[in-house]
Image 1 (cartoon, rainbow, N blue to C red):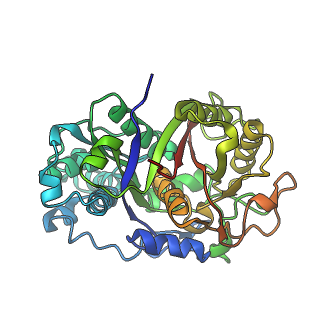
Image 2 (cartoon, rainbow, N blue to C red):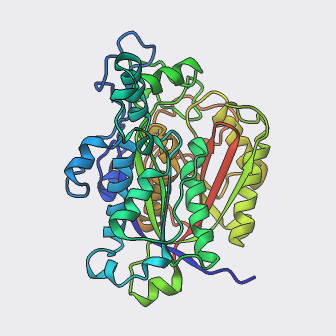
Length: 416
């Protein structure tokens, strides 16, 4: 079957490096760390006291004032990143009005949803009784409300729902959105992920399952993928959103095309609620499925934006999966965005897709920082520790989540 070609025409994000895509990528190229001590709540008795939290965030130009007061941060990030992506795609004003909005949709997921609204509502019912709970409690904790509110604001009546597959959410959302375009359900989809679990409940929960780094004396060195001294991931917050369009729709309106989405693959480890399969079999399957869906051979892949969270088990499971699929990394460059921005959970896939697209656009891939003592299996020549010029043919971006959910997407430079 001849599949519709799908292109990326807009990008928007909220991150620890701000909400401008070019500034974000320049910080990555410079090898800057966005990790800093947590200041939003008292965590002095916690074993982890740092994170890569969103900075310089001002929703006011994009969100009504009353909504700013009410909404959970994840929903605010969804609205801002989504509208910035549409803005980048020149789909505002007349550009927005000319769209067939019945053929435009939103698919922006979240792993944990309105966690802050849930936390505050739980305290209210325990301390003051159910009569004092806000009527917005239920709508604003659910994972689909961010995308629903975005659609209400811009009038998109096409496919609209959320995916929630933990830290694989962003990639699952992008894959599903692309498939809606292929199937003719939509011409335009706004897709990605959003997350903010940086509160007592979120940090405490991840500490309880022994997932977080405890390098409190050197927080900017705490996220160290593939390094022998890694001790867990660093929590990040933010959102990453793409505008996907069918190629014919993008060309008809004269859109700027950043890259082409070739395909995506998903799989399940069917193994453990938090730990990946040590042999990487599930991850390898998602990569192979992505390449099959994209219709490209393995030898064309020469860049991988790895999931690489800096956990003792996860990093090497992914590495083994990559070598299982490709045999060696001789022609492949691979990096870990999370070494600088931490792990943004359900937003990771969206944000890291943007990093991969910028690598295609600029011809430069960012370094992996803190890789001081690599695992013996790791081919260090394939993982640059400084920004490196690299002409990308096909790029893969991987995301994996608790529950064994795996998702990989393949993107490439657009060639007409």
